[in-house]
Length: 306
Image (cartoon, rainbow, N blue to C red; front, side, top):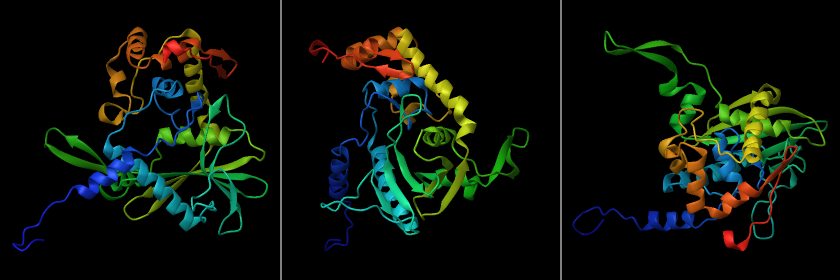
């Protein structure tokens, strides 16, 4: 506040923060495999990610990703115990450590084997001695968390009455896990490991106050859906026909679709022409790939394509 009592709005600190966020490299490592974190989305999104077409995010979404990463570690530290640190003070990924309860844990665990050629990274896996427990941790805004937990403004189901022009309360809602999160977590539970996975738990953390609601799921319940999703991706690589974009869950469109440009493309040929003009190397990667069983074999892309 200056001598006249005027309050000034400063944008310098926000600008500096988002400069750091925007220059932070994407932690996703492109493998060319079907990504477990994307399998619950429309098949075109899965394929685009596989061939190296990067998703586009606004500053708000990038900030949420950073918050989610920070909150995941914070919750792990508070509930189970922090991972070990390296010489630079950074938490070590994909390495076992001893937690608060004496069990062995691994943060950002990457299994050596895969389920049908997929690639998964597990937030936290707990070694119970004769079996594993998988923990998938999701941070959520208060509005999203309330809807999942059926609390706050999302506690009741409503219907609009066109005669009275008022909302009518139907009854109490039940907590509801998000279906695309179930697919992601179930795929982790189906991934072959050296011990059986007895439980897969999805934890939703309210980013405002750290409240947690957890759901235990059975991976076998989602096996058919997962297999069908994988089959659609493999079929596209065999036929060389791109599936058109369509929202699976209703919300995954418009500004909530990180591949929004593809929503307007109505045929495989239009998608191919768009990629040819904007992502030629990715298109060549798709066209030259071969499918052998559940595995996709990529050919070397020539320098002319780059």
